[in-house]
Length: 209
Ligand code: 2DT
Image (cartoon, rainbow, N blue to C red):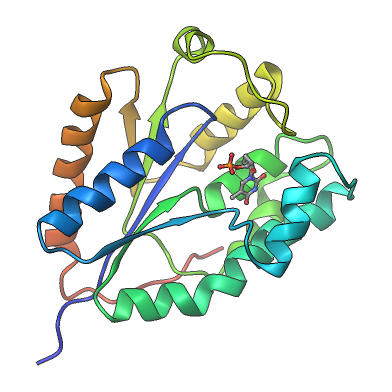
Protein backbone atom coordinates (compact mmCIF):
# COMPACT_ATOMS: atom_id res chain seq x y z
CA UNK A 1 0.00 0.00 0.00
CA UNK A 2 1.21 3.53 -0.80
CA UNK A 3 2.10 5.66 2.24
CA UNK A 4 0.62 9.07 2.89
CA UNK A 5 1.83 12.26 1.19
CA UNK A 6 3.89 14.89 2.94
CA UNK A 7 2.52 18.30 3.87
CA UNK A 8 3.57 21.66 2.50
CA UNK A 9 4.05 23.80 5.59
CA UNK A 10 5.01 27.40 4.88
CA UNK A 11 6.48 30.05 7.17
CA UNK A 12 6.03 33.71 6.28
CA UNK A 13 6.76 36.99 8.00
CA UNK A 14 8.93 40.07 7.99
CA UNK A 15 12.68 39.87 8.47
CA UNK A 16 13.99 38.87 11.93
CA UNK A 17 10.78 37.12 13.02
CA UNK A 18 12.71 33.88 13.59
CA UNK A 19 11.40 31.90 10.60
CA UNK A 20 14.64 30.15 9.73
CA UNK A 21 15.32 29.09 13.34
CA UNK A 22 11.78 27.74 13.71
CA UNK A 23 11.86 25.93 10.35
CA UNK A 24 15.08 24.16 11.29
CA UNK A 25 13.83 23.26 14.78
CA UNK A 26 10.64 21.83 13.28
CA UNK A 27 12.51 19.72 10.71
CA UNK A 28 14.75 18.32 13.47
CA UNK A 29 11.80 17.54 15.74
CA UNK A 30 9.87 15.79 12.96
CA UNK A 31 12.83 13.72 11.80
CA UNK A 32 13.41 12.62 15.40
CA UNK A 33 9.79 11.45 15.56
CA UNK A 34 10.20 9.46 12.33
CA UNK A 35 8.20 11.91 10.16
CA UNK A 36 10.22 12.51 6.98
CA UNK A 37 10.71 16.27 6.63
CA UNK A 38 13.04 18.61 4.78
CA UNK A 39 13.85 22.30 4.89
CA UNK A 40 13.38 24.43 1.78
CA UNK A 41 13.78 28.16 1.39
CA UNK A 42 12.89 30.82 -1.13
CA UNK A 43 14.63 32.46 -2.74
CA UNK A 44 16.78 29.39 -3.34
CA UNK A 45 19.96 31.24 -4.20
CA UNK A 46 21.80 28.11 -5.39
CA UNK A 47 20.00 27.76 -8.76
CA UNK A 48 20.82 29.64 -11.98
CA UNK A 49 17.89 32.02 -11.41
CA UNK A 50 18.67 32.16 -7.69
CA UNK A 51 22.16 33.47 -8.43
CA UNK A 52 20.73 36.49 -10.27
CA UNK A 53 18.31 37.08 -7.39
CA UNK A 54 21.22 36.92 -4.95
CA UNK A 55 23.14 39.55 -6.93
CA UNK A 56 20.02 41.71 -6.98
CA UNK A 57 19.50 41.41 -3.21
CA UNK A 58 23.16 42.22 -2.60
CA UNK A 59 22.71 45.28 -4.84
CA UNK A 60 25.32 44.04 -7.31
CA UNK A 61 22.83 44.38 -10.17
CA UNK A 62 19.79 46.57 -10.83
CA UNK A 63 16.69 45.08 -12.48
CA UNK A 64 13.24 46.50 -13.22
CA UNK A 65 10.77 45.65 -10.41
CA UNK A 66 8.51 43.56 -12.65
CA UNK A 67 11.42 41.58 -14.07
CA UNK A 68 12.81 40.73 -10.66
CA UNK A 69 9.33 39.79 -9.44
CA UNK A 70 9.07 37.25 -12.25
CA UNK A 71 12.51 35.88 -11.40
CA UNK A 72 11.45 35.24 -7.79
CA UNK A 73 8.39 33.43 -9.13
CA UNK A 74 10.45 31.50 -11.71
CA UNK A 75 12.70 30.42 -8.85
CA UNK A 76 9.68 28.66 -7.31
CA UNK A 77 8.62 27.21 -10.66
CA UNK A 78 12.06 25.73 -11.24
CA UNK A 79 11.60 23.82 -7.97
CA UNK A 80 7.93 22.92 -8.52
CA UNK A 81 8.72 19.40 -9.83
CA UNK A 82 10.92 18.79 -6.77
CA UNK A 83 8.18 20.00 -4.41
CA UNK A 84 5.56 17.76 -6.04
CA UNK A 85 7.82 14.70 -6.05
CA UNK A 86 8.89 15.12 -2.43
CA UNK A 87 5.31 15.57 -1.21
CA UNK A 88 4.12 12.58 -3.24
CA UNK A 89 6.92 10.44 -1.81
CA UNK A 90 5.80 11.26 1.74
CA UNK A 91 8.32 13.96 2.63
CA UNK A 92 6.87 17.02 4.36
CA UNK A 93 8.41 20.30 3.26
CA UNK A 94 9.01 23.01 5.81
CA UNK A 95 9.34 26.10 3.66
CA UNK A 96 11.01 29.35 4.69
CA UNK A 97 9.07 31.95 2.57
CA UNK A 98 6.93 31.15 -0.48
CA UNK A 99 4.63 32.93 -2.95
CA UNK A 100 3.25 35.23 -0.23
CA UNK A 101 6.67 36.81 0.37
CA UNK A 102 6.93 37.13 -3.39
CA UNK A 103 3.74 39.16 -3.51
CA UNK A 104 4.09 41.06 -0.20
CA UNK A 105 7.61 42.33 -0.99
CA UNK A 106 7.05 43.19 -4.65
CA UNK A 107 3.70 44.87 -4.01
CA UNK A 108 5.37 47.10 -1.41
CA UNK A 109 7.07 48.84 -4.34
CA UNK A 110 5.49 51.74 -6.25
CA UNK A 111 3.46 50.74 -9.30
CA UNK A 112 3.14 47.08 -8.31
CA UNK A 113 -0.25 45.78 -7.21
CA UNK A 114 -1.20 42.60 -5.39
CA UNK A 115 -3.23 41.14 -8.24
CA UNK A 116 -0.51 41.56 -10.87
CA UNK A 117 2.04 40.12 -8.47
CA UNK A 118 -0.12 37.09 -7.65
CA UNK A 119 -0.64 36.01 -11.29
CA UNK A 120 2.63 34.10 -11.89
CA UNK A 121 2.08 32.16 -8.63
CA UNK A 122 -1.16 30.59 -9.91
CA UNK A 123 -0.72 26.83 -10.39
CA UNK A 124 2.09 26.32 -7.90
CA UNK A 125 1.43 23.72 -5.17
CA UNK A 126 -0.83 25.17 -2.50
CA UNK A 127 0.42 24.99 1.10
CA UNK A 128 -1.51 22.91 3.63
CA UNK A 129 -0.83 25.70 6.13
CA UNK A 130 0.80 29.12 6.20
CA UNK A 131 2.19 30.36 9.50
CA UNK A 132 2.78 34.08 9.66
CA UNK A 133 5.30 34.85 12.38
CA UNK A 134 4.25 38.25 13.57
CA UNK A 135 6.53 40.58 15.47
CA UNK A 136 5.86 44.08 16.81
CA UNK A 137 8.16 46.82 15.55
CA UNK A 138 9.48 47.34 19.09
CA UNK A 139 10.57 43.72 19.45
CA UNK A 140 11.93 43.68 15.92
CA UNK A 141 14.04 46.77 16.72
CA UNK A 142 15.42 45.04 19.84
CA UNK A 143 16.68 42.18 17.67
CA UNK A 144 19.34 44.54 16.26
CA UNK A 145 19.90 46.59 13.15
CA UNK A 146 18.80 45.48 9.73
CA UNK A 147 21.51 44.17 7.43
CA UNK A 148 22.61 45.80 4.20
CA UNK A 149 20.54 43.76 1.75
CA UNK A 150 17.82 45.30 -0.36
CA UNK A 151 14.45 45.58 1.47
CA UNK A 152 16.08 45.73 4.93
CA UNK A 153 14.55 49.03 6.06
CA UNK A 154 11.80 49.80 8.56
CA UNK A 155 9.41 51.67 6.23
CA UNK A 156 9.59 49.00 3.57
CA UNK A 157 9.02 46.20 6.11
CA UNK A 158 5.95 48.08 7.40
CA UNK A 159 4.40 47.98 3.91
CA UNK A 160 5.33 44.30 3.56
CA UNK A 161 3.57 43.52 6.83
CA UNK A 162 0.43 45.29 5.73
CA UNK A 163 0.51 43.34 2.43
CA UNK A 164 0.81 40.05 4.34
CA UNK A 165 -2.34 41.01 6.28
CA UNK A 166 -4.16 41.67 2.99
CA UNK A 167 -3.11 38.28 1.61
CA UNK A 168 -4.11 36.13 4.56
CA UNK A 169 -6.99 33.69 4.18
CA UNK A 170 -8.47 30.81 6.14
CA UNK A 171 -5.34 28.67 5.64
CA UNK A 172 -3.22 31.13 7.59
CA UNK A 173 -2.33 31.05 11.24
CA UNK A 174 -0.97 34.27 12.70
CA UNK A 175 1.55 33.47 15.40
CA UNK A 176 2.87 35.93 17.95
CA UNK A 177 6.62 35.47 17.47
CA UNK A 178 7.51 37.65 20.44
CA UNK A 179 8.07 34.75 22.84
CA UNK A 180 10.96 32.49 23.80
CA UNK A 181 12.20 30.33 20.90
CA UNK A 182 11.39 27.06 22.69
CA UNK A 183 7.78 28.10 23.53
CA UNK A 184 7.21 29.15 19.94
CA UNK A 185 8.59 25.81 18.76
CA UNK A 186 6.15 23.85 20.95
CA UNK A 187 3.22 25.92 19.64
CA UNK A 188 4.33 25.34 16.02
CA UNK A 189 4.83 21.59 16.54
CA UNK A 190 1.27 21.40 17.83
CA UNK A 191 -0.06 23.16 14.74
CA UNK A 192 2.00 20.91 12.47
CA UNK A 193 0.55 17.81 14.14
CA UNK A 194 -3.04 18.85 13.54
CA UNK A 195 -2.31 19.88 9.93
CA UNK A 196 -0.54 16.56 9.37
CA UNK A 197 -3.53 14.62 10.69
CA UNK A 198 -6.14 16.56 8.78
CA UNK A 199 -4.26 16.46 5.45
CA UNK A 200 -3.98 12.65 5.33
CA UNK A 201 -5.83 11.36 2.27
CA UNK A 202 -6.32 14.85 0.80
CA UNK A 203 -4.81 15.58 -2.64
CA UNK A 204 -2.22 18.30 -3.21
CA UNK A 205 -4.01 21.36 -4.61
CA UNK A 206 -2.68 24.40 -6.49
CA UNK A 207 -2.73 28.15 -5.89
CA UNK A 208 -5.72 29.80 -7.57
CA UNK A 209 -6.46 33.27 -8.95
P1 2DT B 1 15.74 35.89 2.82
O1 2DT B 1 16.30 36.95 3.74
O2 2DT B 1 14.69 35.01 3.47
O3 2DT B 1 16.80 35.12 2.07
O4 2DT B 1 14.93 36.70 1.69
N1 2DT B 1 11.67 38.00 -1.31
C1 2DT B 1 11.58 36.67 -1.05
C2 2DT B 1 11.03 38.58 -2.40
O5 2DT B 1 11.12 39.79 -2.62
N2 2DT B 1 10.30 37.77 -3.22
C3 2DT B 1 10.18 36.42 -3.00
O6 2DT B 1 9.51 35.73 -3.78
C4 2DT B 1 10.85 35.85 -1.86
C5 2DT B 1 10.73 34.39 -1.60
C6 2DT B 1 12.25 38.75 1.02
C7 2DT B 1 15.55 37.67 0.95
C8 2DT B 1 14.58 38.76 0.58
O7 2DT B 1 13.85 38.41 -0.60
C9 2DT B 1 12.51 38.84 -0.45
C10 2DT B 1 13.56 39.10 1.64
